[in-house]
Length: 267
Image (cartoon, rainbow, N blue to C red; front, side, top):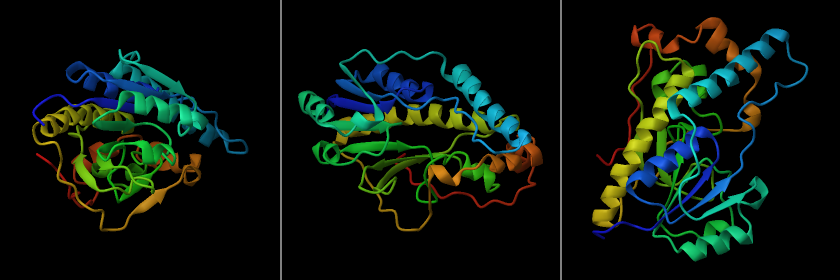
């Protein structure tokens, strides 16, 4: 291709989503952005749980919010043509018309709900999602949390993949894991994962600018598609009661027996 591709971004409006968009914008000005207004980043705890689990739940999400503000600071919408939508409007006709008006070479997605028809069919072939999780091992929801629950924090990472009709199941282009340090808590790892992925999407766009494509790999092995309802406040006891949010330190000290993830990489 040997020139800058026309890029449309589809994403959420949380700190991490806008950080990703703005990193891209610095080198590759976006032709447009569809921004979905996501749920509150500080959810209310479920009813009928113990006071201890309620305290863990509130602490978990408050500390996540604090970590994202620290790592990502306040992020504005990218300076481009923007269509802001609700979750219910994401796959609607107005979004399709906006996409058509941009006529992008590639679409980069991070932080929206599931892209479905008729929007799905209106997107170009090179539509790439950034999934917070190593697919196919961790697909679906909260997939930077579940590696900690299953005592393998080294499996907290991201997957760049083509979108498909199934959640996080498209052909994989590239995967990223952060550099772990002993002082990292669960939210540090998540934020560092997004930061490293934001740097590496620039390299992936560089490759696309030169070659007009990426190598991709079919997801062959099986994993778990985690649903939102799979998460329960009781799961947080493993992170905070048992490991005091020091699981990375235990892993780096050799006190957790984990396999090493086999990543798909373009470089």
